[in-house]
Length: 307
Image (cartoon, rainbow, N blue to C red; front, side, top):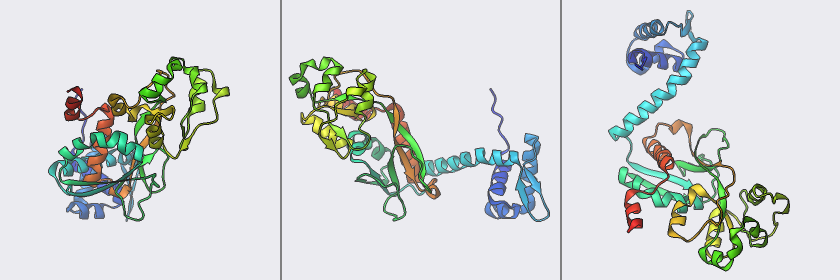
C-alpha cells in the first residue's frame, strides 16, 4: 500500500509550533519567519483536512486532533533525529557509563559486548555492577539496566528483556541425584533461594505442590550468587532462561526439567528523558533491543563454540 506521508517542511513546522506553543518561537528554531510557519501549518491542515490549531490574537492552542498528532509525530521526529546523528557519527564518541546487576553483566552482557564494541569503537564503555538505584542525580552514570519495568519519576524506562524461570543445577549435582527426572524430587533437595523474588513457591504450584514448597535452603542477595552456588554443586537454583544461554552451552549448569514459570519482564533500559537523543545512549539502547530480539552470541563466539 502506498504510504500517506505529509509534506516534511509542513510537518516540521507543525511539530515545532505545537511543541513550543508559538509560531514565532517555532520560526526562530527553524530559522524562518512566523508567517512561513503559519503558511506551512495551513498546508498540513489542508493535506489532513483537519484543523490543528485554534488561533487567537496573541496565542495558538493545538486542537484535540493537533495534540493527538503531536503525541504521535513528535517521538518519530526525535527518533529520526537520533538515527540521523548516529549514522552521521555526530556526538557518538566518548564514554558511556552503564550500571547493571552482576548477573545481567556476567551472564548476558559480557558474552555479547564484543559486537557492540566492534560496531561503535568510538564509544568508551564503562561498566559498573551493583543493584541500582535507578537514579541519575549524581551524574555518575548514563544508563542503568533497571530491574523489572516499574516506572521511575523523571526517568525513561523501556523494558527489553522478559524471561521465564526453571530449576538448574550443576552436572555433578544431577549425577549425584539421579531421581531428579521427577520434578517432585525437588521437595527433598537443597533449594537455593534468591532474596530478589525467590519464585520457588510459584514454580512448585505449577507441578501441583505449591502448598508443600520447602521453606529452607541457603539464601543469596541476587541471582548471580545463586547461579554461582549452583555451579559449585550447592543445590538447585531457579534460573532466568533468557540470561543463561551461554551458561547452558558451557555446561556448568543443566536444566533437569522443561517446566518453566510464567514469563515476566526482568530488565529495562533506563536513562534521563532529557538525554533521549544522546547518540551514545541511542546506540546502546537500540543495540540492546536488537540483541535481545535474537538473543544469540556474536558470530565469532558462535564459531569458537562450534570448534
